[in-house]
Amino acid sequence: MTVTVDRGGRAPAGPSHPRRPRNPYPLFLLPGVLAFLVVIVGPFLMNTGVSFTEWSGVGSPKWTGLANYRELLDDSEFWASFRHSLFMVVAMAAVPTVVGLVLAAALFDFVGKHFGPRIAAVLRACFYLPQVLPIAVAGIVWSWILAPENGSLNELLKAVGLGSWQQDWLGDPDIALYSVMGVMVWVQIGFPLVVFMAGLQRVDPGLYEAAELDGAGWWRRFWHITLPQIRPEIYVVLTWCSIAALKVFGAVYVLTKGGPGGATDVPSYFSFTTFFEKTQVGYGAAISTVLTVIILLLSLVGLKLQTRAEDAEEGGRA
Amino acid sequence: MTAVPTTAPRTRKVPRPSRSVVARYPVLVALCIGALFMVVPFVIVTVNALKSPTEYAQNGPLSLPHGVHLDGLKDFWERVDYGQKLWNSVLISGSVAVLAVILSVLNAYAIGIGRIRGRTWVLAFFVLANVLPQEALVYPVYYLSKETGLYDTRLSVIIVFTVIQAAFGTYLLSSVLGTFPREIIEAARIDGANAWQVLWRIVVPMSRPTLGVLMVFFFIWTWNEFLLPLVMLISNDNQTVSVALGVLQGQHLMDATMTNAAALLGVLPALVFFLVFQRTLTRGIAVGAVK
Image: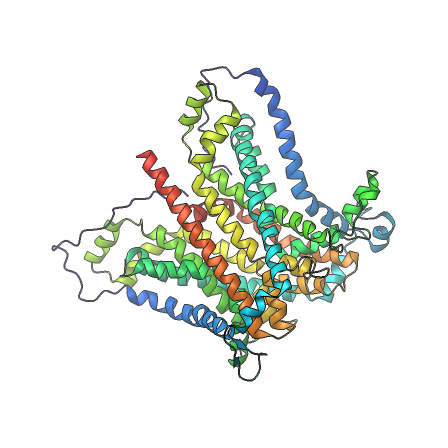
């Protein structure tokens, strides 16, 4: 599935081809644009508008200007939820990227070369498996494994004589966030691995041979060749995974419901409860608007880094 | 999978230091342990779903089952009307996969091949729509669907996800179609085909592999969605697998054996998709990510 990029395929509008009087193509965009206006743009603008009001979902909203945002600044629950988001970024972007890089390099150049691509593929599939699981189902599986009574993890600890390490993994406010992070690492790890392994296939094997002839060890080749070569993929993975980490909802809903005592609350769960349980729609809209702004900024930065890395790479090859 | 090019030089000019031959097996073993750790939760769930409740209570979750008890699974299946949930998931995900691919193709045709004016901005718009968090749409969508009488219908979820998935599809397909050989299109136009015929008779058939990848993605992504279906589908008859299981778990109404049955029944469809589509999935991800 390698897409050979053939830029410069822009056909010169030669005078020999009589152009039709009307350009038919914009018409094809019509259904898409209409659907997007109704389903995405409209609701998004409405949400932003509502964030400047006080509204319970019935009756008409009362304009309050920036009051919701001012309230957010003093809301410790709001700050806590964003602090937990940073933990999620560590669990879903930073750790999976680093581990994914090492795993991908090990699978690609070690297992793939010495034990055959088949074994590498099977191992890769094992790591990727949690990615196809609905997050709600992953949550059920793990909340059962991490259960305080009769949970597999506690039973396992008891069986190997570490009974004193048993914990109420999801119910103890000091541990719950780390437990959720552990589950998210398990969920997320397959994505970077697959992207990086695909990226490694792009790298010119001649580079490795030359480095090897010069006596560079595995680690130095990894650091000086592999990493710079797949830099675009690294940026893509970091951006996508960070965005996914900021959007975490299902796992928190199923595993902890933001608890105990708000210890695992995240912005999207916080806005969800504000919308539908507290029915403070204006306030919930303000939370989700802040989240949206952060995500949009993050994607712009990510996109910029990615294009720059790709340009640098193309320039280097030319 | 099989497509790993064996670019590794089989004959090495320099004999490898024997040290690395020794180091090979520890690395492989470490990787296998890692892989085992990833798979263990699936194994434990399967093993325990086959136990009877008494057996589970006596021996805990780590023992092997004596024989196969399917009663727990059957009870759970009937209690939550799992067949209906499966059908809802299939219906919603299937419709979204097909409709979103159609919508993406139309958009990408105008952007990638039609090269309409302002296409960079149009594309940027779709990219932004793609990263927009659903939290910023969920309340208005909920409110508007109530106003229009679409609340708690599978149709509402199909419409919303068709558009959300098409944002990604448009973004990916536009760059793929941007590299479509122009000569073929020019030739067809000279032969008198109009833009509509070119799309259905030439562009779509020639892009079939990419469209297939997209369709698989959309199906699985929609299957796995949680927030919007949770908000939009409240009646038992309309809920998807994810929502039904997530809500049950959230209410803490299930005992250990039921949780097990729920987990296994939730895992099974995912495993089936994985086995059926794994090549498409792992390869498709690579395409989507780099473009």
